[in-house]
Picture 1 (cartoon, rainbow, N blue to C red):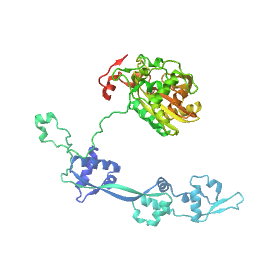
Picture 2: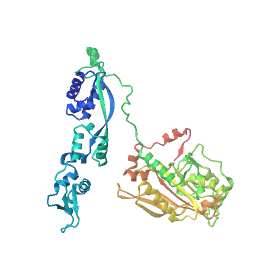
Picture 3: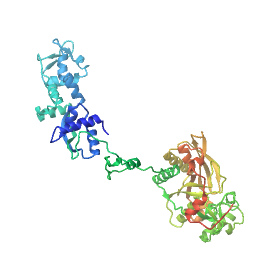
Picture 4: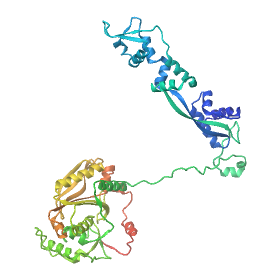
Length: 499
């Protein structure tokens, strides 16, 4: 509530009149700031029907900072006149004064002074009248005292044009007695307590009425997890760069699309049970494009398209095994195969979704994580294009310190690992892998021979750690990994893992 003394002084003023008082006049008479009286009015309105207050708007003239200076010291032209002695003053000396330039032109217009350009000592200014009347200052003083009605509109507009005066809108309250008017205000209770009920004091208390129009206190709410925030940023960056999002709603994938279609041999360590989660029910997939499957089988076992292949006995039984996908590149393979079945046009794809690895949990590894993948298919793409896209991609995220290191991937050649500097750990951390898809992967799909596909993949977690300076994956996730939670959410009930 506002200051009690101010409230009571306002109520005494209202008590003396029948038709009401203006809040600005009350503030002036009490020598208080108007906002103090406004605060008292609002406090009384909150108490009840003690007063009635009508908001009114009015316009009045107010001196600017320059206008107040002139009202105190005189106009620029008058001060110029006062600065010139009988023997005159060199023009150069006058122009050194703060008011010299403006005052000189105004005084010349009023014919108070003259300029002798032919004077032997250089241009010199002399008075042309013995005395002057500073009407500008007199008008401003009238306005300052609240006597604006004594000036014509033309005179006010001239002062406004010189930026000595401004017209302002003032909002005031017209205050009258309310139905429960009193010169003393009793604080109303806001809460009915058990003690009041017990001793019966509530009967004599005045309670503040409920305001059902009030918005209430904003409830505390959750915030986006750092992973979700960075995921949203990644998605927006991809969209800004013209990429199209791939459908990634199949956590279960066949070994054919997850490994074989990527020219990854069936004896590769990544396909071992120690690295991959295999499903026992349903254990096998059966729906494959047969002609494409035969071309994949041939390039693995016999070679083709300029490659000698791996020279091993490729088995359909191994390709049929269902797994929890180990990377979203399986989705990229499906999309590229779909692209090859139509007339080729350059494309840019991306995906951000969950993948699963049979990892030993530690500070930097989880059994499940989010993989970000970008794929660009076009004619004549090179490693330089890949590095340029990666620089643009990470710069948009705010990560500018990047390094590239040659690497090996079964399905890309050449291949690169991507490193970024972690300010918290003070070291370079691997954030992704990249490369150009091999012909042994692309040509069996049916893509044109002169089409290149650059691709890169990274986890969502590591760039998030770098961006937010998080040092430990446990610190990032905030809870123990629970794969079963994922499976329950997806409706998977009756299957087990072979570890």
